[in-house]
Image (tube, rainbow, N blue to C red; front, side, top):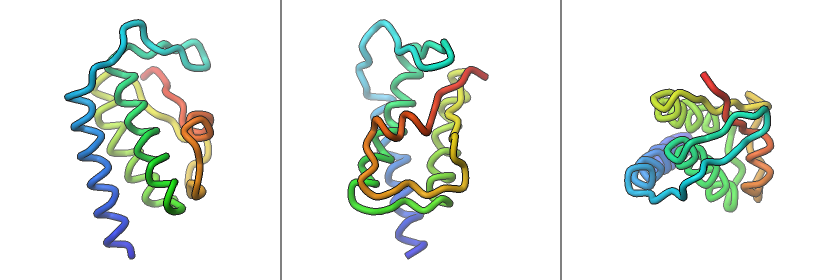
Amino acid sequence: MKRNISILAGILLVLSMLVFFAGCPQPGGNTQSGGFTLNAQQEVVYNNFITSLATTAATMEIPAATVKSILDASNVSANALNFKIVDSKPDTAVAQNSTAENLKKRFKPAKI
């Protein structure tokens, strides 16, 4: 089971990187709470992270350790773009059927 979750996390990371490099973001940026405005590249990384979690959560609960692994991997890309994704409920699993909107409330972008 743990091996399957690790493989799934790796696949999601590769998928998010492919979308990051091939994505066509809309101009303008996205303002998040706290007044931090994401530029187009930052928005792609953030949205890929949220989409990856929402897609996985549609079929199963995501254990806290896997959430941390995916978050850490996404923050490597985010840090390169001068922001980070902050988990407001660390060490907590993501419930099955969590929506992207619910995940955006838990995972917030923040300026480094």
